Amino acid sequence: MRLWFAALLALTLLRVILAATLPLAPDETYYFLWSQHLQTGYLDHPPMVAYWIRAGTMLAGNTALGIRLFGPISGALGSLLLWDAGEQLFPHRQAGLIAAALLNATLMIGVGAIIITPDTPLLFFWTAGIAALARLIASGNPRWWLAVGLAAGLALLSKYTAALFIAAAFIWLITAPSGRAALRTPWPWAAIALAILIFAPDIAWNAAHHWASVIKQGSRETRFDAGRSLQFLAEFLIGQFGLATPIIFILAATGLWRLGDTPSQAGHLLVWLTIVPGVVFLEHVLSDRVQGNWAAVMYPSACLAAASLPMATLRRWLKPALALGFSLTALAYAQALASPIPIPARFDPAALQLGGWPALATAAAAADPAFLTSDDYATTSVLAFYAPAGIPVAGFGPRWTYLSAPPSHLAGATGLLVSRHEDACPNPVALIPRRAGAEIIDIYRVCRISAPDAGVLIPRP
Image 1 (cartoon, helix red, strand yellow):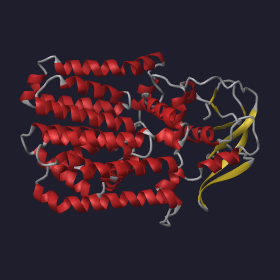
Image 2: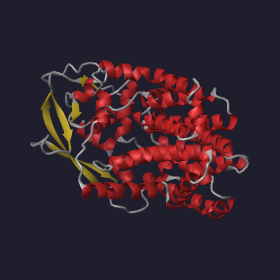
Image 3: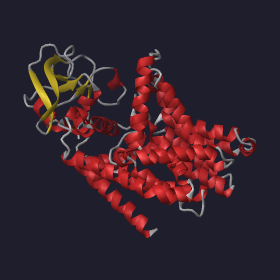
Image 4: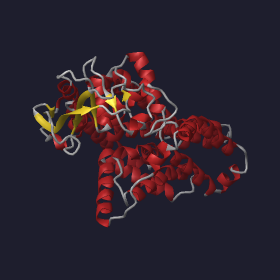
């Protein structure tokens, strides 16, 4: 056990070093802007990621480490929660230790624990909810429902996907006699009330802003196209096969299948916690692409299911699964740091997400414009974070009106628009390449723009 804790500590320290070293991705700079103007809700998501970033930057400054600090920390604490859940659900077989090791060996968690997105707090509180339910099952003490409600409410404040946790827990209850009996007591309903109370600030923000966030997340294209749906399905399944790493994916699927055929209360909980979000994501591919990170919430329960497999199976496959998973994760870390594998930038996820942003912002600001802006939130956020001090960065359009930043007061001033799109910038005064090393990832067009009347001044680090 001491060796396991030492390994977790070493892995966490490595993730902290990488978090401090790697450049920020555009989404991370965007959520950093949120943290400069704390609100109870935002257009894209609930506010928890902004609170976590603000806490991190208060400890480590407005740096990559400060912004990402709670990614590695929550990864470590979440591993301990998963370990406890496994020990409660499947005692006397080191299931918690195995599940936590498998989870950390996935590319999903190996990479996700370094960066900061709304999925970071969501996954932590989702895992905390599993741990609370495991304690409930093991002890029979209904007061654990309050811990479940606390975790569910905090998860909802992280990302609306947390509603699937509540749905899975409810289905688990109504599909078993013991669960239906629990629903005749006040405890599960107290948990739901507590979750709603915690989530209430975001509900109030949405009510005051015409339900902007709920509408944005709830509305999507519903046109069915069989060819594209098959493409999206293949991308999702192949992506998860890779992000889980192949052996862990197979072990998890086998464990879930086996638990579905048993009368185990714990097993059925894990199946529903995995199947419910999985079904929703599969429905989504009928009309749109599912982003790989969305499925992260399925991983804790899936890894617990893998840890429930017979010991003979685990003795044969656990070491190869961990070896392959951690090797692939180490390769991903090395590629992000030094690009030892000569992959074309357009096929290299690390280069696409991290490469060339500081140089792009510096080049865009070289002419000392009255302000900088872009027609997409990601580039605007990068400019705000990386452009030299003293260059105002402004945001125009509906997205930025929901951020409580000060008005730009730039109406009529001539600044520069940085865009990848020809229709937004048909007559560029400059072309700026974004590079990963010597390779060009993308070409950005720069054109002059007269500031509209309405806009906000983006906060600078």
